[in-house]
Structures are given as structure tokens and as C-alpha cells.
Amino acid sequence: MNRRTPLMLALAASLAACSDRVEDHAERTGNAIAADVDAATANVVGSVDRLTDSVANSLDGVAVRSLDRAADRLDGAADRLRADVERHTDRATDRAGAALEQAGNGLRREGRREEIERARDEERNNR
Image (cartoon, rainbow, N blue to C red; front, side, top):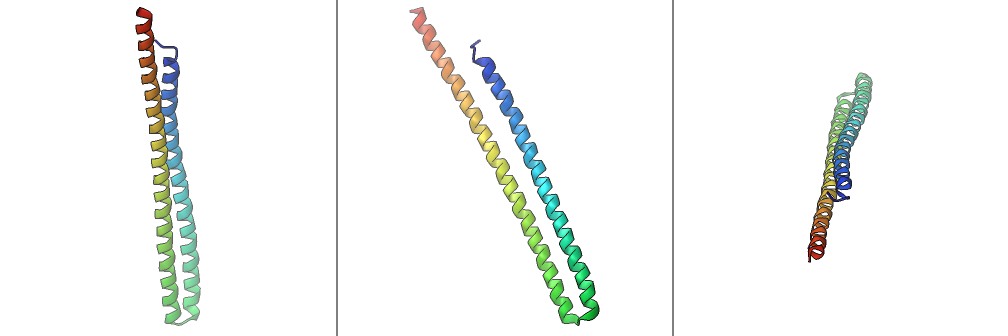
């Protein structure tokens, strides 16, 4: 067994653990962002609802319809924001996965190079 083999195995194990941590962190980050967006949306909707109730008591139907449209726009904006956050989280997860895959491929290539060099050294020694 090559002296570097334990190191390569340790690196591969670390890389696998890192991948799990990156995915877990990305998921927790996405969930936290989504929860913040949901809370902000709930606050905005609650504020708009309270404002709508107050204005409905004092303004005519035109003002009420305008506020309803504004609330719909706020809901649409919140939905678009949530989708953007999810898309960015997915993209970050994909990039982290690609980086980990490249690192793994590099480790495999390095291991193959070492095997070839070892075989050449053995062949030279056997001559």
C-alpha cells in the first residue's frame, strides 16, 4: 500500500463529509431564507389587511379596489422574491456540488498518476 493511500482515503472521506455539510447548510440556508420571506410576507399582508380595513371604513369603493390591487401586487412581489431566493439557493447548491465533484476527480487523477509512477519505478528497479 502506498504511503499516500491513507491520505487519499482520508481526503475522500473528508470530501464526502464536506459534500453532506454543504448540502445541509444550503438546505438550512434556503429554509431560513424562505421562513424570513414568509414572515415578511405575512407582516406585509397583515399590514395591508389592517390598512384596508381602516380605509374601507372611511373611503369609497375606488380606494378599496386600489388597495386590493396593491395587496395583490405585494403578494406577487413576495412570490417572485421567494422564487428568486429558491433559484439562487439551488444554483449555489449546484455550484458547490460541481466544485466537490471536480475536487474528487482531481483526487482520482492524482491517485492514478501515483500508480503509474510507482509501476514505472518498479519496472526500472526490476531491470
